[in-house]
Amino acid sequence: MFIVFIALAIIALATYILYLRVTREDRKLPRYARIVPKKQGDYYLILSYWSTDHSSRDMIIHNLDPEADEAKLVILKSKDGFIMQIYGKNGKMLYEKNQTTISELTNKFMELRRPPQSNRPPPDKPDESQPPESRTIEFK
Image (cartoon, rainbow, N blue to C red):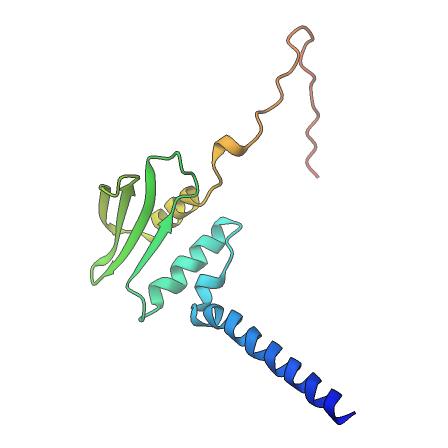
């Protein structure tokens, strides 16, 4: 009985150590880096928290669409505000803007993190031989 208890304790301890190793990386990230953005307000929160974080100097946002000309966005903090740099697929800087607002950064962040258009199914085309149906819109 005592041997079974020792074996269970060792298994529990090993599982806990493994859990700590796996979650250690997540605990190193600041709170704003753990937000999974789903709407514009989430992107704004991420940038607002990042802008007040004194331990971080820059933010790099990679484009989800591999076919896009803009590969990544780099946001740098300066004493005059934020500097937005956009890089192409070849690594060369395409565009740089000094004194960028959080709103502009949020819109660009959202644009880059939008899933590629090519993966979306094409919209259904209506049959042209029949007149289009009318839909009723009701506001309550």
